[in-house]
Image (cartoon, rainbow, N blue to C red; front, side, top):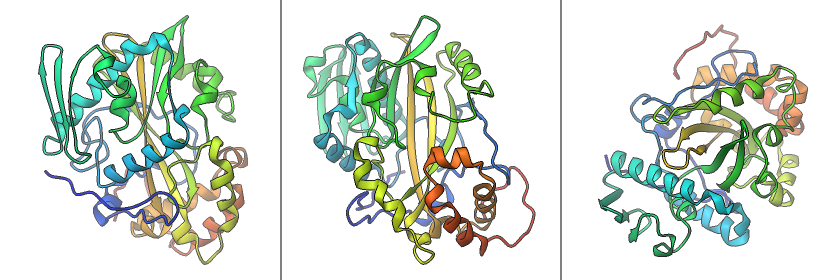
Length: 346
């Protein structure tokens, strides 16, 4: 299947929009009517056709626009991509994982030919044709992690495993939900999760770390995480808070449908073969309220989840300023009918 790509922007005029197909296949993250904090990890196995989980790496209609937005962000702040010197082997692991998955599952868009260490990579949507020597960073225009993640949707963190912990020692992060790679680089798993409320009291991250330390090669896992964003902006970093933070004050009862977006992250983790590091991928999906409510069951459920969200979680996710306006707006789409776990969209 050949993909078609939208001409759109994630800043300035905010022309981003989801097609009807993208709306139907949006990874809606809630299976209960009430908010519940959970790790919700499952095996990263193939999902339904055209879903976000059909293939290990998901390429969709927003691909070209997202890569253009990443280039703009990196031009303004090169520190969004950093790697400590000992992570070079993991960088090559990541390049192999992404190239082989993209070429296998999207052959009309990407081609990878390997002759020993001599590799030939073709990326048709971005007009790239590159021959290089695997393992020799001097044969690429960027380091291996930066080279391939400039061509793959989602953010990527490389986690080194040592001293019974995971350390964030490399990453390409340009579409994060209000956290900073530059700040977290070199931190361990517990340290970079320190700001999250409630979870530490429940021991959530301690259990998650124990699980991930035993992650096996060839058995990746995934989970969904969510927050909300005003306007379809990918770059909601602390470094640029002065640009996007003010948008929270712009929400009115009249513009909720267009300005308020549910922001869902499909997070996946793989054990890498040569380095024994773990790659943590964070793929961001955006859907505005006017699009979300076209799926009636989603509208009902999200209204109830947002209404019951504990205040500390709302504060942590940065929703407090516009949550009530959104709950009131969604109330008109909640017909009071009971919903049950495991439903699909209307």
